[in-house]
Image (cartoon, rainbow, N blue to C red; front, side, top):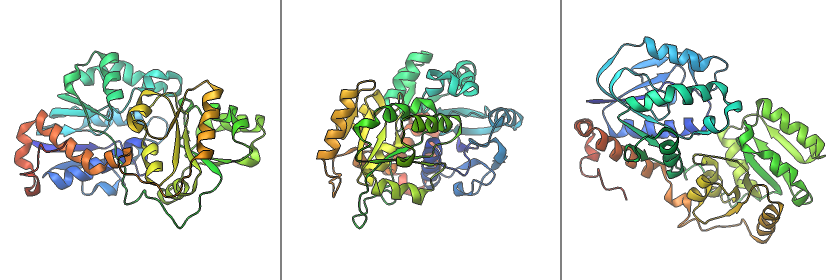
Length: 366
């Protein structure tokens, strides 16, 4: 059996799934003699056995998901292949397939993802039955998949996200500025409204930057900002480039997320790796990833928010020791090695296509 990596749904602009897919695809290509299915224009993945139209990728606009599904149905079979997808998007053309379900947010918040909600409700159950195994990014999502779909826990394997500390790192030469940072506020479950409703706790000291914020939810937040008389204190950024995002992490007073649900939360790690303080909603994924570090707030409780901002004012975000923190625990190298181990457990014959450097190291990830 030969490994085939399916990243055909990933476009050029980074999303949480896109970051995960890019790192895992690169790691697998360095570990196996394998092939890849990628979207047109997604050159970061390297040479591809097959290219999907760019208009089918995530973020390509209305109808992209349906076009992607129809395209996948038209493809020829890939005999003798194990197809690994770092997303939940299947092609159904390999002898064995492994998909990655990052979270079930579209099931929990149906109105903000109507088409994806239908996919997760009516199509994904069939994909799960066909899959040789399901990978996910956290124990929180593992339990969620098991409970919603009654999928066997022993067939759900956790391969977490990571953070690249070569890119995301503190910048001691830069000064921390008096602004709070929110990243990835494209949908209502991100719950930025609650931070704005509690602006009386922070507006006297901080500005607010809301990055990667677009669409209908941005329009809604702009109305809330006007109602709260925060227009002069709030800056919206449609899409932050990697360099811009790193600079924001390195200079903010704190990164804040009030999300109602997540499968993991990559920005938590990125912000911490850049030396920023973190205030996060007290939900299962954040408890799992932060593991007692930083500050959690109970949603709906003003006193909890007040306590968090008191903590922030009493805590210096200067030079920080990141040893023993989630930044050290969640590396892309470790996630890649875990992925290789789990792939070999699901399909041992893939060992024949491992590159030389792996022959003595497989199975040694703690």
